[in-house]
Length: 388
Image (cartoon, rainbow, N blue to C red):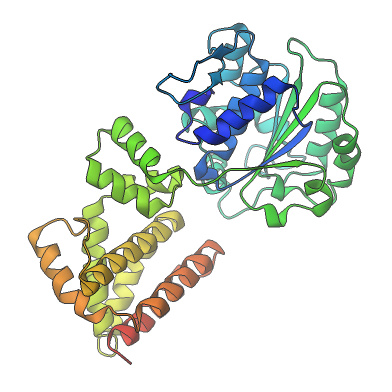
């Protein structure tokens, strides 16, 4: 993974380059940020840059906005690009599967994880990883066997590079019984050892682990950078790319989810949903049928639909306030719906609507019954829109 393939994040990348070239590389760094911001991809590109045998430096005029990058062509870079470098070690959450029903550890899933990372260009997250594993609703952990592997792997001498690099992805999933095994090596690492920890939930990382690392904060991707990438990668129209970028909040993984499901389908569902909500006292059966249809989607798609709906509410609020809005309701029917529906979205109810949607997204993420959550949300939304 080269820095040039990272979406945006140029300021952070250049600071990492400065750190690497100054020789002030901390032995343990924690990349903290949403997975869609590229936290894992950044850690991987940083590791490849450190190991590169022919680093490329730019004079500030390079169109990429980078100070330097790995060459992508030397033997080290080629192996890193395939995740097969002998001095690169990867540890990640794992659990039992149909094939591995006991004594699971990252090492047993390395080939599968490598394929998964390469397919997603290193923009990875836990739900899609668990889906790739086929573990249904199980949650993965970094267990005591993983901790033993970390200590053993780093006790060896390097094979080809100056540094042995251990990337621990989703380190907040480190099992509490495994943590003590890592404290000593994190505080007093073997010579030429680098730890790159990655997490989107720094609050869940054990304090004893967090205190032994240098924080690298990964901010959301800038709206224009994400939109530009969507335009270039998927030949998307500028307005649509900007809308998806804004909706995704600088998260590339969310942007892909919004892109994959037809915008027209989300708009049509929103229009039907809000019309039913207005009649919540009389159309409970139709609301239940609508909710059943939405519940057939995956949980991530359900959350995407709720996020998209919030964006449409925001556009209606803009209409109410007489502000400019983007063309998010597509056709003439949709635009007429927005003009009529905006009369019911106002300063009195918009705040509560946002809170309801955020709570519903949280509950769905926590594996609550989607049918119950969405049915209740519909009733509450109907009450607010009706001024009750």
